[in-house]
Length: 345
Image (tube, rainbow, N blue to C red; front, side):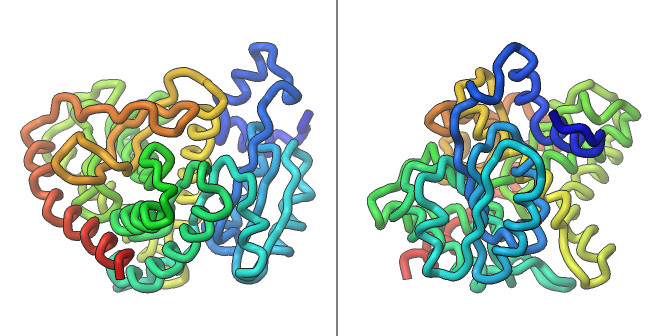
């Protein structure tokens, strides 16, 4: 049993459902063996994400990879007294070994956004990184669930899909764009305005993962609060601009790394629960979709033993949200097509 209260609260935040499973009489011995790989583990998101995954009792093997600096991160994280064994790998020569036998691969690799930089500016650097990592995934762990964090997600997920198609390993149920940070922000900002405890708040966020493509559905938020229209507009804008808010607050010294690591850990936990057969695990994610005419779209997804069990519809939208949906489609489609074009070059 882990004694420090700090560690306990962190673990429960990341994996509340896992601890509920344990309380129902499952010991850690009966929890399936699960290998989680973090690609980009020495970076600003990768380091806190690696720590949070080390705290997750559903992880039995934690594999940390980066081009440099990973042995130190792995040694540091490995001293945390939780279930998972930690291994660090660095350099392209060790990528295969890092990936072999993976159940879930989380990709925060790439360069962060700097002041004045759009997510689009990141494109060429991060797109190339994603392309090479996904080529390795298709070779060494083609059945793994892939959690894409590297921005711009609206383009990197389509790139990954094309790489997997070319390799003959594509399964649309196993590829996820992690949009959980948009949900985390929407919940936090809504709770503040509605004056309700944030732990009980739920807000679906659909569309994509950049600027106006992020569409929080505050009309479906629970618990219900009758917020004025101008408050909803302001909350929507703040959710869309959350990343910029952090970049500016850090005055050029970084981007949203800690909140993104938390969101990434939440989504990976949901994937692990789904793999382990926990029922009714539903999260928003950017996946291949028929919900709109766009080939990829973020909406609520039911997770299970094969990854995506069901892509859920949008539900009833307010007039403001309907307009937001129409406004985001051209930009999201352009980002998707840009990713596909890059992958086919």
